[in-house]
Image 1 (spheres, helix red, strand yellow):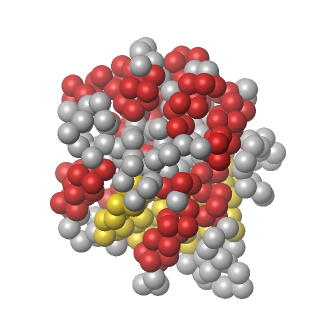
Image 2: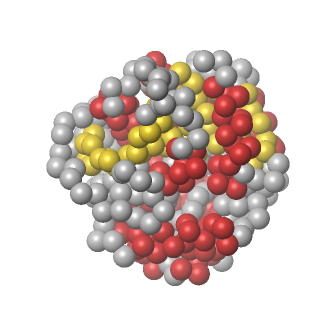
Image 3: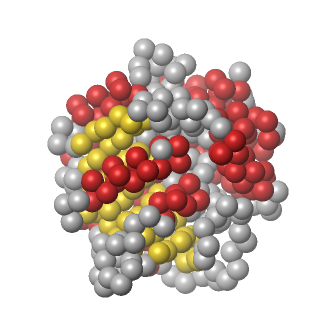
Length: 331
């Protein structure tokens, strides 16, 4: 049962039936970048070194930065994680592109960023990304988003496309579509209480779904999630995750993807066990979702990566980085 609910919830969150988290009043303001007290971000295990923090719209946002080696005005790579996760998913890639200024952030509600009362809608996250770029004094960047971070990237491209050099989407949500009936079922299966009650064994089961072949090499994700559960802000994390599931469903953009004007590269793992949803859409496959991406964005490059699951950048890091470098080769 837990595997079914995890697959329904689209990413790395264990869940069981329960009431959906209430949606807060939608945030309609632009993100500001006023300073807040950002001293002393408490770390989680397996984070990159030198975590920093800034304020976007009054919320502390944790991030990591790697300047380009000896290059002034270097192009910028921005890495954005998915649902239930954080910037440490990119810890290998953060060090792998020395010719770029590399940034990776924790979206509000996740990782080491503020979690209380986060709207967790896709437009909210997109505004946060733009506000973060403003704070970093970045005019344009290559946006690299995973899963929910991919769907956030679609919103950035649609509403703030002038801020992007290109869009790279890894296992993105937002391509697979859901009926209203299915969306209501998904919302009903996610609750903060279920997330907080999950055991380490359930978390490991959840994490395993992200890989074509799970091995102990990925156990650090389970250990990190356990450490997160012991933090004072874990209740707010759980609430933000439940809201984000509704935010993803409410933020459907498939019918607008033809409006995206920035160069776009989409990749799916051939062994993805989360996209498509194998219980709601058993007739689909990662290859068929990739076909849907091609149909909606005929000018985009779309690849399916063999022997890879949902988290291609962890399971097949060399292949992922090769593909990303090929997307950057027109710079």
